[in-house]
Image (tube, rainbow, N blue to C red; front, side, top):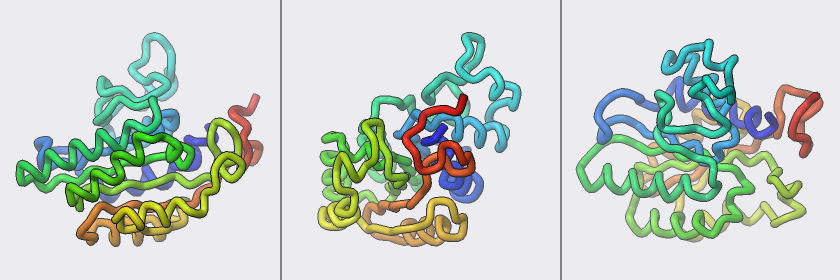
Length: 221
C-alpha cells in the first residue's frame, strides 16, 4: 500500500488529463507502470475511467479476478505486464522508437520507482533513449525515498539522480508528486521538450494513511 499511495496523484493526472487510450498503436499514448507493485492505484483509475468494472476491485488478487498483484496485458487498459523492476524503461523506449520510426504521434509514459534506479538495465535504456532522440518518451519517477531494502538514503545517495539523468542528455523536471498543479506544470514542460524528458516527483510513501506515511511498513493490520 505504501508504494501504491505515493503515486495516486501521478497516475490520476496522467489518465485523466494526458493519456489517449484509444486509437491505433501509433496514435494512442502508452502507459507503462514499471513499478508494477503499485498496481492497485492503476486498477482504481482504470475502473474510474471505465476500462474495467468497479466490482473487480473488490476481488483483487483472488483466483477468479483479472486483477493480480502486478499489471498484466490481459487487463483492459494495461499496455505492458510489469513486476520485474528495471524493465519498464527498456520497453517504453522500444515502443517510443517504433512510433517515431513509423511517423506516429503517440507518446510513451513510464512511471518508475526511485529504488528502481539501482537496476543496470535502467541506465542502459536511459543512454540509448538519448541516442535515439526519443522526444516522445516521458519518464516519471515516484521519488518517495524508500525501496525494499529500506530508506533510499541508506542504500544509495539520492541527490545525484537528477544530475545523472541531465548529464546523459535528458530534460529534467522536478515537481510535487501530490500536487496536481505541480504535476501538470512538469508534464506540460516535458511534452514541449525536444528530447527525452524525466520528471522527479517528490512524494510521501503511504500518503493519506497515517500509519504508513513515510515509513517502510508494508501493511496495516
